[in-house]
Every structure is written in C-alpha cells, then in structure tokens.
Length: 135
Image (cartoon, rainbow, N blue to C red):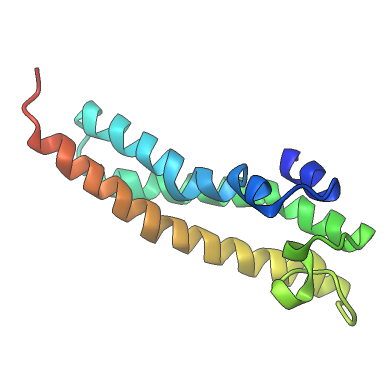
C-alpha cells in the first residue's frame, strides 16, 4: 500500500522499487526460510524450503491483486500498471483482462520466479549452513 501511495505522489521509481513486495518473496523471506529450516533439522529441508517459498509467494501475490483492480478502476497512470508494461491500464482493456487474466498471469510468473530465484538463494544458504560445524 505504501508503494501505491508513493507512486501516486510521483516518488522516484528507485524508491518505490525498494519497498516492493517482490523483494520480500524473491530474497528476504527465502533467506529467512532457509536459515530457519537449516537450523530446525526437519526431514527433506530442500522440499520444505520450496514449499514455504511457493506458499508465501502465492499468498503475497494474492494480496497484490487488488492493486491491479484499483489501477484499472481508477485508471492509474503509474508505469507498472500501463498496458505497455504488462499492466491493466490502457485502451481496449476488457474487465476480464484487467480483473482476471493479467493479475493471474503475473501471479503465476512471480511465484515460479520466486521458487527459482528464492529457491536457489535459499538452497545455497542451507548448503553453507550445513557445512559449518554446529556449536
């Protein structure tokens, strides 16, 4: 929500990108999950890591979907919502496309990307943590 407010106030995109939810499900939470899982000693830690990342990214994307709806309803001219950048604001955008197709496609793409990127980063962290002798 803070990002949308800053975008509407025309804050620099570097600032708005820093507070994006993407950073949370691509890096921050996969790192957190990896550390937590590596310390817990659960069976199949890598499978648990991928499950945790998938569920978290899907839920986080689900929370982002209403911003697409609001962007379409109010025709926000923020670049990330424009059709030219894969968004829902522009000429000839149907309600089906704005309310279902674009948010769903973006959600699926980001969840897959999160599993790949976050899973890789998290797995590397887990390998490093397993190599260190426990005290």
